[in-house]
Structure formats: structure tokens, C-alpha cells
Amino acid sequence: MKRSIQQKIADEIIEEQKKDGSVVAINIFGSVALGLERPDSDVDIEIISSKAEEWQLIKKERYGIKIDLEIWPKDKLLERIEDYPFLSYVFLKEKTVYDPEGFMKGIMDILRKYFDKHP
Image 1: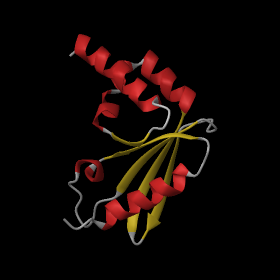
Image 2: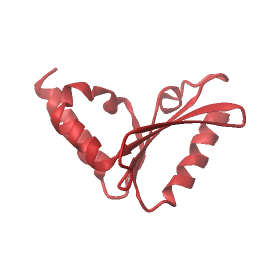
Image 3: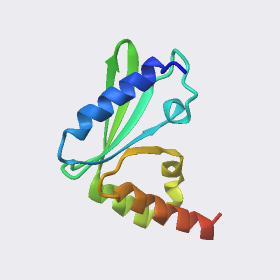
Image 4: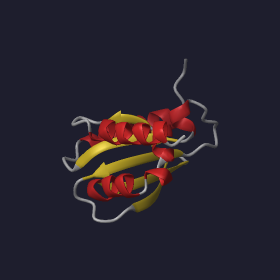
């Protein structure tokens, strides 16, 4: 099956971000993560960073396709999950594409346990 331009863009950005030593994990979400993108779909990527200080939304464009990069500080993401797991269900819908130290696996385990107990 032919890969969409959105999938190619996501792959390029993922490879670029993996070179940054502060990147702890990378997730994709939205239509690209589900394989349901259309020609007008954007690319949604979440980057968890050990150096970022605040959550950021960076809007870009590549090859005429809109890109939303969400940057999460590692410690703030963990704090949010621990303090407000009930607001964090959306993370379970994401697709982790880079997680060399298992950080996102740990986050997903916390969330699955929470939602198993609180459906």
C-alpha cells in the first residue's frame, strides 16, 4: 500500500527528532496514527523532552501539509498523569513511535491501570 504524504512527513520529523538527545519519546496521534488520513489531513506529533520547560504547540508546514508539534516537558507530563489521570485518557489513543527508555510505556501502564479501575 502506498504511504501517504502525511506518513512520509511524520517519518521525516520522527527521524529528525530522534537525533536530539533531550527527546525522551515521540507519539503520533490523530488520523495519521489511525491510518485514516485524507489528502487535507494534518500531521499531529507529540514530543516528550527532558529539556523543555513548558508545554508548547508549534505549528509548521511541510510540502503544503500542516503540522502540529506538541512539546511536553517530561516532568510536567508525568505530573499531569499522576495528578489528573482522569483528564489524560487521550494519551491512550496515541501511537508511540519512539520510546528508547520505556518512558511512554510507563505512562501508558499508569493510565491503563487507572482506567481499568475507573471505567
